[in-house]
Image 1 (cartoon, helix red, strand yellow):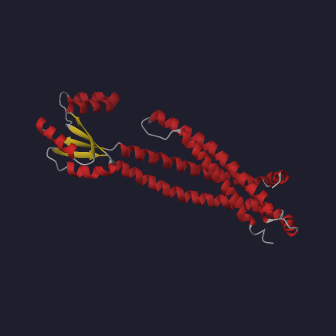
Image 2: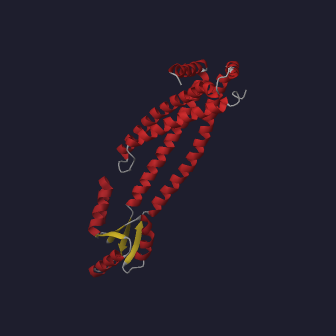
Image 3: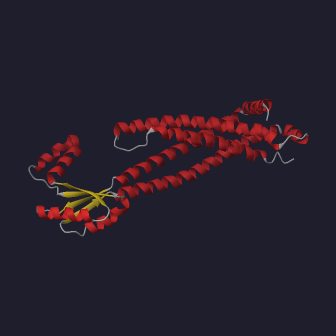
Length: 295
């Protein structure tokens, strides 16, 4: 393909976009909205998966010891827990340490503990860290049957709820993305179809004089790709701005939430959205050209 031919294709694509400004704007807007929603859902799912994975890696079992257990019984319980399969580490947390931690969590409201006086209602406990989250339930079942154990608590319920929400978002996101992709294809293909219809005689003449389908198709494909590129670039700019604003707000008020950093996440997301936008534009053009190339 010569340089002059390539210039002809590009020039024709740009002229076609200018001739159909209204439909072109509609196509770009639809691509922008579709890809922006796609990007938002993708970032939400990535962050929720990241939170779930971090929570899973930090799962620990808290074993509360029955009140009145002597030091020998507490030590013996700790040794039995250490022998269980999958146990990585066992830490003893005495009543005083537990009360101190609770006061730190209360922060400015720690004066509420003054009403307790010298009484400490918190029990002694063991913090049990596991090799993997999959072993937690089995370990809890065995620990609950040991002597001197009052109660065992672990955060598996929170993780399961987080994964359930992630699955709902993923399924809902896929459905919404498919709907928006079809809407985008419809508008872009109609934009190209209007262009082709206005030039149908020219297309037919080119076919009769021996022009190949690809020679006729390339300007329209480029037009669709340019529309998709413009829409995806707008979506990328909006997504970067929104994610930056949200992550700054969350870090200011909920600094403990483990959000995925901007880089390299937004680089990958931007590249994917740009490729998706151009791909949708090219596909929309191909769909609209089929009928007119059958001469």
